[in-house]
Length: 181
Image (cartoon, rainbow, N blue to C red):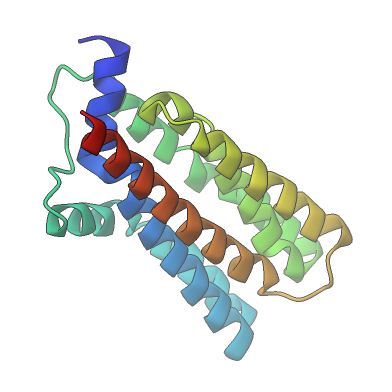
């Protein structure tokens, strides 16, 4: 299987990352809401533990949309997706360290971690949009952390909206590609 064929299979199976970005965006929005309207610790817990449910919820979403949510065993990119996902939990040690210094740095630090985690998705899906997503999240996270107002949930709201926007962009790009085939 060529890299192009493996990437195409990933795009088709996961609708250009639609399910994952949709689920992640909703989790970020829920975490921002809990952190804003209840207490920051609830927002932190919602993002951390909610993120553990992203893959199974993504599977549910893509299968409800009629996509397989899996690729053939010969597709070597499947392992890259798994490896990429497992970079986020240990990176949250850094998010925790930043948060100990300034509670309102939680979401900006998490934005940077999640943004960087999207860089391998460029190769995984063969879609440059993931580079743009990574840049937006990293730059926005750094900007909010350094220059933003000390509002705990602001980064959560921003990230949730950005992820939802990129979810629909990825879906659009894949559906357009499939119509052209």
